Image (cartoon, rainbow over all chains, first blue to last red; front, side):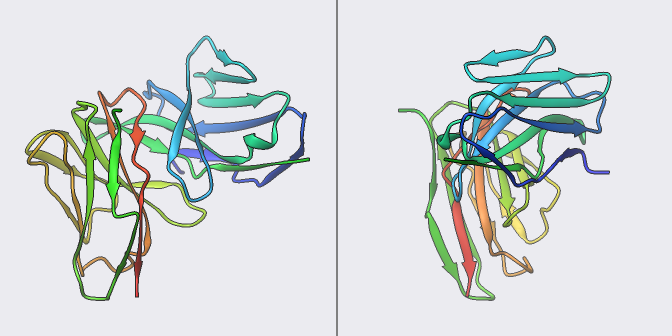
Length: 112
Length: 112
Protein backbone atom coordinates (compact mmCIF):
# COMPACT_ATOMS: atom_id res chain seq x y z
CA UNK A 1 0.00 0.00 0.00
CA UNK A 2 1.35 3.45 -0.89
CA UNK A 3 1.98 5.78 2.03
CA UNK A 4 -0.09 8.53 0.43
CA UNK A 5 -2.71 7.77 -2.20
CA UNK A 6 -4.59 10.16 -4.43
CA UNK A 7 -6.89 9.74 -7.39
CA UNK A 8 -4.61 10.86 -10.25
CA UNK A 9 -7.54 12.17 -12.31
CA UNK A 10 -7.59 14.00 -14.60
CA UNK A 11 -10.54 16.01 -13.38
CA UNK A 12 -12.09 18.24 -16.04
CA UNK A 13 -14.68 20.65 -14.68
CA UNK A 14 -16.35 23.81 -16.00
CA UNK A 15 -15.40 27.19 -14.64
CA UNK A 16 -17.44 28.06 -11.57
CA UNK A 17 -17.92 24.47 -10.48
CA UNK A 18 -17.03 23.05 -7.10
CA UNK A 19 -14.47 20.26 -7.11
CA UNK A 20 -13.22 18.01 -4.31
CA UNK A 21 -10.09 15.89 -4.02
CA UNK A 22 -9.47 13.15 -1.52
CA UNK A 23 -6.31 11.60 -0.22
CA UNK A 24 -5.62 8.70 2.16
CA UNK A 25 -2.49 8.04 4.16
CA UNK A 26 -1.24 4.86 5.79
CA UNK A 27 0.77 6.03 8.81
CA UNK A 28 -1.58 6.68 11.71
CA UNK A 29 1.23 8.49 13.57
CA UNK A 30 1.46 11.23 10.92
CA UNK A 31 1.19 14.68 12.41
CA UNK A 32 1.36 17.26 9.65
CA UNK A 33 -0.63 17.48 6.45
CA UNK A 34 -0.46 19.81 3.49
CA UNK A 35 -1.83 20.47 0.04
CA UNK A 36 0.63 21.67 -2.57
CA UNK A 37 -0.10 22.97 -6.05
CA UNK A 38 2.20 22.20 -8.98
CA UNK A 39 1.88 23.89 -12.34
CA UNK A 40 3.16 22.16 -15.46
CA UNK A 41 6.96 21.89 -15.44
CA UNK A 42 7.25 24.01 -12.30
CA UNK A 43 8.09 23.36 -8.68
CA UNK A 44 5.38 22.51 -6.11
CA UNK A 45 4.15 25.44 -4.02
CA UNK A 46 2.47 25.21 -0.66
CA UNK A 47 -1.25 25.84 -1.04
CA UNK A 48 -2.33 25.27 2.54
CA UNK A 49 -1.66 23.30 5.67
CA UNK A 50 -4.43 21.02 6.92
CA UNK A 51 -5.52 21.19 10.53
CA UNK A 52 -7.67 18.81 12.54
CA UNK A 53 -10.41 21.38 12.90
CA UNK A 54 -10.49 22.00 9.16
CA UNK A 55 -9.41 25.27 7.64
CA UNK A 56 -10.45 27.60 4.90
CA UNK A 57 -8.55 30.05 2.73
CA UNK A 58 -10.82 31.94 0.40
CA UNK A 59 -12.31 29.46 -2.06
CA UNK A 60 -10.24 26.59 -0.69
CA UNK A 61 -11.25 24.37 2.25
CA UNK A 62 -9.15 21.56 3.66
CA UNK A 63 -10.39 18.85 6.01
CA UNK A 64 -8.62 16.14 7.98
CA UNK A 65 -10.24 12.96 9.28
CA UNK A 66 -7.71 11.23 11.51
CA UNK A 67 -9.94 8.26 12.29
CA UNK A 68 -10.25 7.40 8.59
CA UNK A 69 -6.75 8.70 7.73
CA UNK A 70 -8.21 10.85 5.03
CA UNK A 71 -7.60 14.42 3.85
CA UNK A 72 -9.71 16.43 1.47
CA UNK A 73 -9.47 19.66 -0.50
CA UNK A 74 -12.53 21.51 -1.75
CA UNK A 75 -12.32 24.27 -4.34
CA UNK A 76 -15.42 26.43 -4.77
CA UNK A 77 -16.23 28.71 -7.70
CA UNK A 78 -13.29 27.31 -9.65
CA UNK A 79 -11.28 29.62 -11.90
CA UNK A 80 -9.30 28.87 -15.04
CA UNK A 81 -6.16 29.67 -13.04
CA UNK A 82 -6.91 26.76 -10.66
CA UNK A 83 -5.83 24.34 -13.40
CA UNK A 84 -2.83 22.51 -11.97
CA UNK A 85 -1.80 19.29 -10.24
CA UNK A 86 -2.67 19.14 -6.55
CA UNK A 87 -0.34 17.15 -4.31
CA UNK A 88 -1.39 15.69 -0.99
CA UNK A 89 1.54 15.68 1.44
CA UNK A 90 1.87 13.92 4.78
CA UNK A 91 4.70 13.76 7.26
CA UNK A 92 5.80 10.29 8.25
CA UNK A 93 8.44 8.79 10.50
CA UNK A 94 11.29 7.12 8.64
CA UNK A 95 14.50 5.89 10.24
CA UNK A 96 13.87 7.99 13.31
CA UNK A 97 13.28 11.24 11.42
CA UNK A 98 10.13 12.96 10.27
CA UNK A 99 9.86 13.23 6.48
CA UNK A 100 7.28 14.61 4.11
CA UNK A 101 5.80 12.06 1.70
CA UNK A 102 4.08 13.25 -1.45
CA UNK A 103 1.13 11.68 -3.20
CA UNK A 104 1.39 11.34 -6.96
CA UNK A 105 -0.94 14.29 -7.46
CA UNK A 106 -4.39 14.90 -8.92
CA UNK A 107 -4.51 16.78 -12.17
CA UNK A 108 -7.26 19.38 -12.47
CA UNK A 109 -8.30 21.22 -15.63
CA UNK A 110 -10.87 24.00 -15.44
CA UNK A 111 -12.66 24.53 -18.75
CA UNK A 112 -14.14 27.87 -19.88
CA UNK B 1 14.42 38.16 -1.10
CA UNK B 2 14.87 34.83 0.66
CA UNK B 3 14.55 31.68 -1.35
CA UNK B 4 16.15 28.61 -2.86
CA UNK B 5 18.15 28.75 -6.05
CA UNK B 6 18.78 25.72 -8.18
CA UNK B 7 21.13 25.71 -11.12
CA UNK B 8 21.29 25.01 -13.92
CA UNK B 9 17.65 24.99 -15.03
CA UNK B 10 18.39 22.52 -17.83
CA UNK B 11 21.28 20.08 -17.98
CA UNK B 12 22.30 17.58 -20.62
CA UNK B 13 24.65 14.78 -19.76
CA UNK B 14 26.32 12.09 -21.79
CA UNK B 15 26.06 8.56 -20.53
CA UNK B 16 28.91 7.67 -18.21
CA UNK B 17 29.42 11.23 -16.93
CA UNK B 18 28.91 12.52 -13.42
CA UNK B 19 27.07 15.82 -13.06
CA UNK B 20 26.49 18.05 -10.04
CA UNK B 21 23.29 19.99 -9.45
CA UNK B 22 23.54 23.09 -7.32
CA UNK B 23 21.10 24.08 -4.54
CA UNK B 24 21.59 27.21 -2.43
CA UNK B 25 19.20 28.71 0.13
CA UNK B 26 19.29 31.95 2.10
CA UNK B 27 16.30 31.16 4.31
CA UNK B 28 18.47 30.06 7.23
CA UNK B 29 16.75 26.67 7.12
CA UNK B 30 18.45 23.77 8.84
CA UNK B 31 16.94 20.97 6.75
CA UNK B 32 17.45 20.45 3.03
CA UNK B 33 16.16 17.77 0.69
CA UNK B 34 16.57 16.43 -2.81
CA UNK B 35 13.64 14.91 -4.68
CA UNK B 36 13.29 13.40 -8.10
CA UNK B 37 10.09 13.62 -10.16
CA UNK B 38 9.38 11.55 -13.24
CA UNK B 39 6.54 12.37 -15.68
CA UNK B 40 3.14 11.65 -14.15
CA UNK B 41 4.75 10.57 -10.90
CA UNK B 42 4.98 11.94 -7.39
CA UNK B 43 8.16 13.20 -5.76
CA UNK B 44 10.61 10.61 -4.48
CA UNK B 45 13.17 11.45 -1.81
CA UNK B 46 16.82 10.97 -2.79
CA UNK B 47 18.78 12.44 0.14
CA UNK B 48 18.13 14.78 3.02
CA UNK B 49 20.19 16.70 5.53
CA UNK B 50 18.95 18.03 8.84
CA UNK B 51 22.17 19.69 9.89
CA UNK B 52 25.53 20.73 8.45
CA UNK B 53 27.97 17.86 7.88
CA UNK B 54 25.24 15.26 8.20
CA UNK B 55 22.95 13.71 5.60
CA UNK B 56 20.82 10.61 5.22
CA UNK B 57 19.73 8.43 2.32
CA UNK B 58 16.16 8.71 1.16
CA UNK B 59 14.15 6.11 -0.74
CA UNK B 60 16.13 6.16 -3.98
CA UNK B 61 19.72 7.13 -3.04
CA UNK B 62 21.51 4.62 -5.27
CA UNK B 63 23.58 6.35 -7.94
CA UNK B 64 23.51 9.72 -6.17
CA UNK B 65 25.77 11.49 -3.68
CA UNK B 66 25.50 14.71 -1.68
CA UNK B 67 27.49 16.91 0.66
CA UNK B 68 26.47 19.48 3.27
CA UNK B 69 29.56 21.49 4.13
CA UNK B 70 27.63 24.73 4.58
CA UNK B 71 24.15 25.41 5.89
CA UNK B 72 23.23 27.26 2.70
CA UNK B 73 24.36 24.65 0.20
CA UNK B 74 23.34 21.06 -0.58
CA UNK B 75 24.71 19.95 -3.97
CA UNK B 76 23.60 16.68 -5.55
CA UNK B 77 25.89 14.61 -7.77
CA UNK B 78 24.27 12.25 -10.23
CA UNK B 79 26.86 9.57 -10.87
CA UNK B 80 27.29 7.25 -13.81
CA UNK B 81 25.94 4.48 -11.57
CA UNK B 82 22.45 5.99 -11.74
CA UNK B 83 20.71 3.81 -14.31
CA UNK B 84 17.96 6.18 -15.39
CA UNK B 85 18.94 9.74 -14.46
CA UNK B 86 16.67 11.66 -16.85
CA UNK B 87 14.19 13.42 -14.56
CA UNK B 88 13.15 16.69 -12.92
CA UNK B 89 15.22 17.27 -9.77
CA UNK B 90 13.84 19.42 -6.98
CA UNK B 91 15.67 20.78 -3.98
CA UNK B 92 13.73 21.91 -0.90
CA UNK B 93 14.39 23.29 2.54
CA UNK B 94 12.46 23.66 5.76
CA UNK B 95 12.89 25.01 9.26
CA UNK B 96 11.87 21.68 10.70
CA UNK B 97 10.39 18.48 9.35
CA UNK B 98 6.89 19.19 10.52
CA UNK B 99 6.68 22.41 8.55
CA UNK B 100 6.00 22.70 4.86
CA UNK B 101 8.89 22.80 2.47
CA UNK B 102 10.02 25.60 0.19
CA UNK B 103 11.15 24.35 -3.20
CA UNK B 104 13.66 25.60 -5.71
CA UNK B 105 12.55 25.92 -9.32
CA UNK B 106 14.15 22.61 -10.27
CA UNK B 107 16.75 21.25 -12.67
CA UNK B 108 15.65 19.22 -15.65
CA UNK B 109 18.36 16.64 -16.40
CA UNK B 110 18.46 14.79 -19.70
CA UNK B 111 20.91 12.05 -20.58
CA UNK B 112 21.84 12.09 -24.25
